[in-house]
Image (cartoon, rainbow, N blue to C red; front, side, top):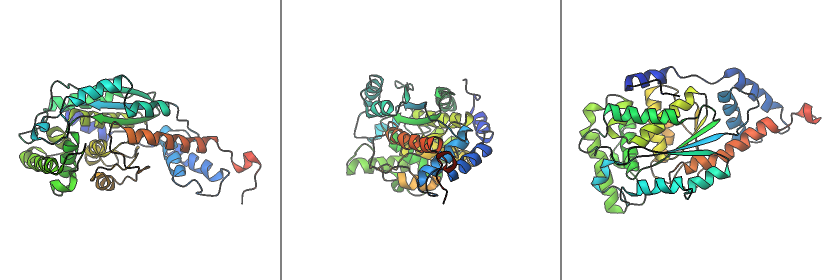
Length: 338
């Protein structure tokens, strides 16, 4: 569906008016969970995830049959500062790999029965180098937010957002530092595997971007405009659209969480419909998850991006929903309730 905004102010207004969880469905799921043939709390966090999912889907006995994975790709002008171990042309090459089914995320999507779409966002027109000024104009960032919003299938029952973009861990680090404070070094990691000299250049670029754009970063959405990439903005748009449709979201790694952080800072409770799929190996991801108050479902040392960690967590969510909806209650099974 067309995005209901054409300016950053209108997008901000959309965030304030997004729907909440269905409290009745949440309570009914909790009640059902208390009657299932198991000791109370025996399934641990699976129970919490299933009840949370049921509330957002508005069903006491939900199903999870139509997960959607959205991959957004964008190029970054800040790569001119030598912040990545790979050249910018790798972004387009990996998009082709996604489209031909050759990436890790393609295999994970097939494993869990998810549909997957790839959206390349003006790869021939990188964002501006944010050490020299704002990365995007308002029109640029709004177009990217709209692309993310409109990519969400209202018929999906779970959304995962992933990304591809050489230089985007630099952008994510700058966004996190601008939103939560601290030194550039606190948020900057090795990304795709830069050496010590590359890490120093990356940290310097983040610090320079924060100083250069300080006067313009008057809101979280302005932080996104000044320091973000198109793919980061598109993920933010998709996460917000999922909330509009009451579709639960699994967040991926550091870059996805930086996009989510923009929403969290723009409106209280904007991420209530989202859980963290995993804690990645990127150094500052744990710190960002703590700032977002999100406990990761998995921690497996992943640092790939692409939505891979969140996609892997689809299986955990499917298992949680299957147990809530498919298990018998004590009464149904004729088992004595101790």
